Amino acid sequence: MNRNQSLITRLIISSLAIFISGWILPGVQIDSFITTIGIAIVLGLLNATIKPLLVFITLPVTFLTLGLFLLVINAIIIGLADHWISGLHVSSTWTAILFSFLISTFTSWMYKWGDR
Image 1: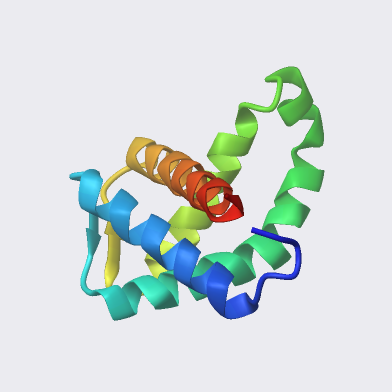
Image 2: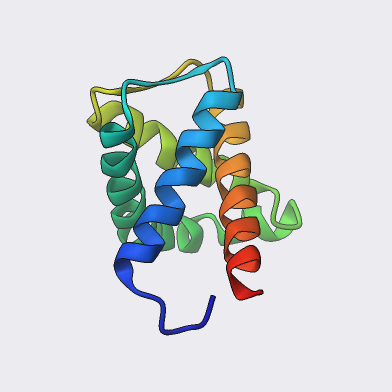
């Protein structure tokens, strides 16, 4: 997609990626697609506010692990969303890491598919 894509388009793509990832992973339970939209909004807000602070604070660890610690930061963000949204349940930290990886992968694919 082009850089001028709307906020609604981003929300729909994120919601679909979250829904598909939650459907694939047995340790993730999402109540409904409406809940998925809420999850996309909360994750967007957390990624815009708290994640940059966590990345800055853990920069030395992230550097030493060649960026792999960002997966842990993403799991923390998923855990916060799980705590704040009653319709989302993630069973473990490893599931949160895999869930965030799948969301990122599916979102990336959808954006690339939309560029065609």
